Image (cartoon, rainbow, N blue to C red; front, side, top):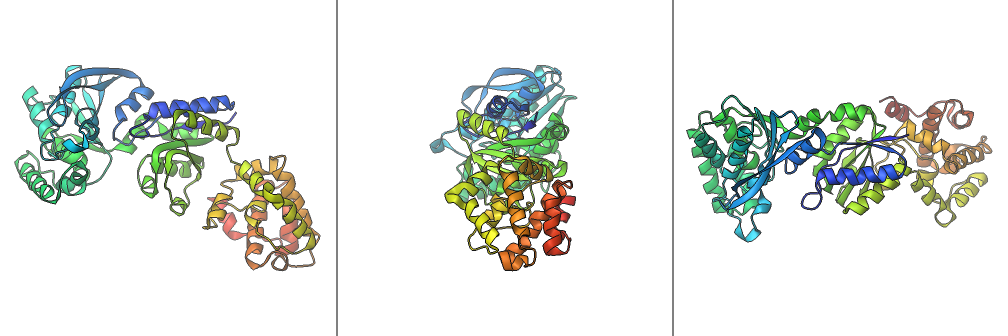
Amino acid sequence: MIRFLVAPDSFKGTIDAPEVANAIAAGIAEAGAEADVCPVADGGEGTAAVLRAVLGGEERRVRTHDPLGRPIEASFTLLADGRTAAVDTAAASGLPLVAPAERDAETASTRGTGELIAAALDAGATTVLLAAGGSATTDGGLGAIEELRERGGIGAATLEVLCDVRTPFEEAARVFAPQKGADEAAVERLTERLQRLASALPRDPRGMPMGGCAGGLSGGLWAAFEAQLRPGADFVFALLGVERRLAAADAAISGEGRIDSQSLEGKVVGRIAELCAGAGRDLHVLVGRDDLDRAAIGDLPIRSVREAGTVEALRAAARELAADPYRLQRFVNAQDRSGTYEQALTELRNGRKTSHWIWFVFPQIAGLGRRPAAQEYAIGSLDEARAYLAHPVLGARLRESAAALLRHADSSPAAILGEIDAIKLRSSMTLFARADPAEPLFEQVLGAFYGGDGDPATDRIISR
């Protein structure tokens, strides 16, 4: 039974990460496969819910204040060990708590976040994990610092801030304040205010990587209470044992609300993809909106990206993935479209290719082609190649096509296919010869047309 690691981020503003993960897991189960449910986060909004869902714990609701000082009720999580609390900055100081017309970056305060940290300490937590993403504030953490000082500080407790960006403290206003309602003049005033605060704190947070998270909250807490600043995704992944769980899976499914090229640069999907590359696992991504330029994938083992923006759509997409984890149906669909395979076989038997079908009749290993068709019909691994050979339609057609080529062993592959497609054929035969050494047909094609030499580029990729 195939086993998937299910490790999505939230679809921000619509579906939280645990709900996304559970919907995907339900679809996998319907297909008769197995899911290891592990929603993840990068230290931004929703991190506390992810830690509670995976590690267990209790949600505690308390009275606090929103960024504009209005009374609200917000929550933190006391994890199952009873000594660790998880607090989302966004719970009390988040941008969604302030309507667009009300946003005022100069007034917005982190006082409510300080109240949540204080409540967690009062509940017995000796370690507080503060997820710093998603704030409406640019106060350098002053509101939270003042609230905690009124409490008497944090005592012997440890405060760890999970950071989703590396921006330094002094750059927080310039980088983030415009999206929080600040115009150019306000950005200048906020920057000056951060500079004054930095000079007044016990330690100077300027220049500290990750000090600018949540409008400088991370740097302010580092300066005032010796908080530890941690890269959010790496910290959460280690805490949840993502790398270990990936090693026990056959493939992974991740996701987020919108994917683009930035998603692959340190955010959740990108980090999962990097881990999959290291572990030799394929990754499938389910998203609410797909804006990813496929060229950005490079050598990452992202085998599919599908739009699925609702719980029902996530469940259906996961069911399809689990039933066909290598998406082999894409080859069948391409070959069956308008009798393409029959045309290709006729051309091979006649000894001359005249139409376009090389990518999905003689597929290559991923990492060689950059054109969209080459990427869409690339084979991601030896395991996928073996599944292709075992497919009742595709395996038989590949062997039939290879046999048709051997009828023209007195010709050259370039004469049959053209110079470029002759290179692709060599790559394809090398891949399938390595996938099934007991099958002589592919080695026979290499022997007849290439002197028995496989494609070096394909072998290099396979060896990685």
